[in-house]
Length: 307
Image (tube, rainbow, N blue to C red; front, top):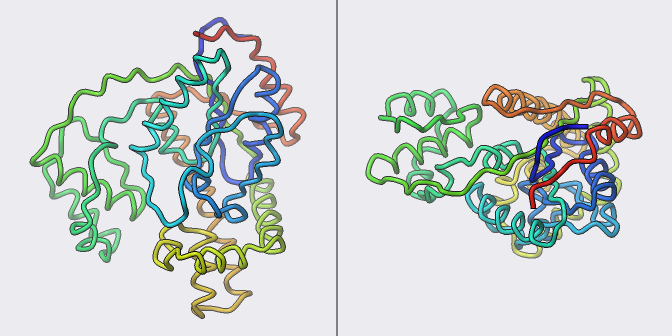
């Protein structure tokens, strides 16, 4: 039980931690609708590789899933706009919005109202710098004059490219003040032990291969999605594409992908901890069993939500 007003429930956690199952059960309990915060489930046809199982939602309405054709580019700025549109619609219908996903940047962008997401992409700049190493990019970034309020995430190669892109744009442009109010969120984070997390990831990856992950990537290619875009989407799509190109054999593909997903889950947890350092409060759920986790969450209800 809590004594504050909330407009939103957020459920986050690393890959294969059971976020969707918990969000669906909670939505049934409070009368909610789910807003996905998954940067790849927005694409149609990218189902097995993203863990998209629409049957899992049952009768619970979901949003921001299957909204684009695979092969297109979608970023955090567009997610912010789409989130606020859906969020307001759900509230208007007197339902409870539940934000659920593992893309920490998307989640943080709406909970803390990031201001630089509207900066456009610069294809020429990206072409010039994307071939550089992460150390070279960090050196370039440090040498740029930085906007006083721009605190960049430079933890990965992709985010460094974006940070440089924003910093260069701000040299000659200014942003209008962001007037959208960040929603007040009650945020839960699923925190499995390392052994459980690793076991879940490995088991799920084996299941995805058995369900036809390789065939899914072949179908995307046959549908016109370029190899470059599939590699850009990362993880399953990157490694399967490389396997199909003959870069390595099937066994090596599975082993490298398994390692990459374990590393990705570790980065997710690091980012969630960074969100806490940035001032977001997360109630961590450490229970191993789903039933115990759900029971823990239910102790926070009923909640008075702001209409």
